[in-house]
Image (cartoon, rainbow, N blue to C red; front, side, top):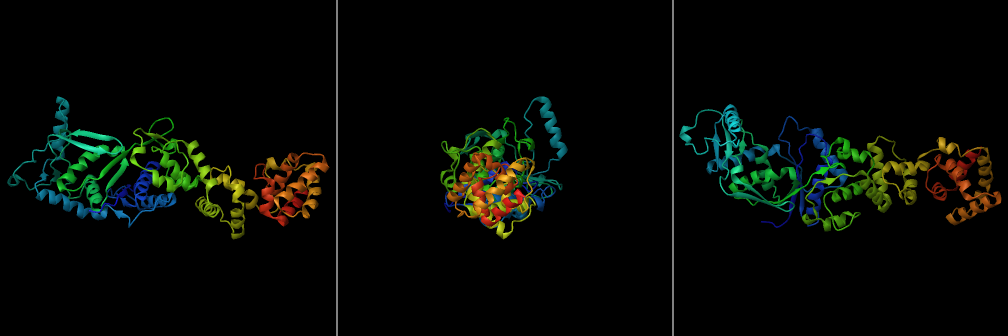
Length: 466
């Protein structure tokens, strides 16, 4: 048997990829990638009524944006239904499963009586040890023979050892009366056939592990390493809901969070490495392990997400950041950047990315590049362009015509001019921002001049002074 680590992410395509699913995928990806293992993707599409191709596409798109690449083809659980049924029939032939002819009415009657008498409602089928000669010609389900004494221990890497008494486990149905396999069987067979060694998933699946272990044991298969991770709660400690930000992953992309910041934040949601808050993918892959995962639910915090995203924007490679900015503009249906504008924005990244936490903030700072002449100032900026300010800009423009267009020279010329006018540079800054960007909050005036170049700067100042 190969000792290579294999993890998987197995979402149901009944809706978008939500933040909890994204974090589960990330943990599986980090664990495998950090150990030279494989990260597989399986779409659990056995619920034919609720599974949609659109939801599958949304999940794949979300993973793609987050940069969580998977190995091999995407596996469809539904496509393996015959294989799942084959395992149930094998257990039937081995005497480890049996045909149960009890009707739904009989089971309901049993449970109602047990409830009324205060007994366990766990259904015990009278068909478990029945002679096949007594089988009627009627519909049946296939049930596994659960162990009836002793205990099942789930050795969980996050929750510790979890012991479940076997008399609490029922003879789980493997095949429905129409012969179709149930989800619990499908998961085990798929994980085994895909060679999954580590199952990392939400702790809402913890109880499923004991029931799934019955199938592993009955088939004589190796049980994977379990790691059931706590769920994500809202800032108020309650289950994450839409009002908390339980949105689809694409909505976070549309809100303008960079993928690297999102990965960093999701990794920190329920897992820690000392006091490290900001880290790279390479560090996360190297550091990620089960020991760093907490047992209690993590709380989603937009302020922390924004803070980390700001740090990732600041640390990003300029070309990569431009590429991601263009993708953001596309998915928010904003006009594409012309090649000339894209080149200008990349050259300006050094002054755009400081203190920008999201792409909308970056776009706002880049307004001076995105705008065409004549610049139409917003209300705040227009207030800076009164007659006095216009007169000052008119006098400054010829002085800048002879500047060598380096930062030092631009600062020297402007400061000298301010002195001759008997004003502080601060008095010049507002009208210059208004003339160059049409905004009152912009990168530094000198950065804008350097990025725009001499001809465009002088043209904008001339327009504003007119």
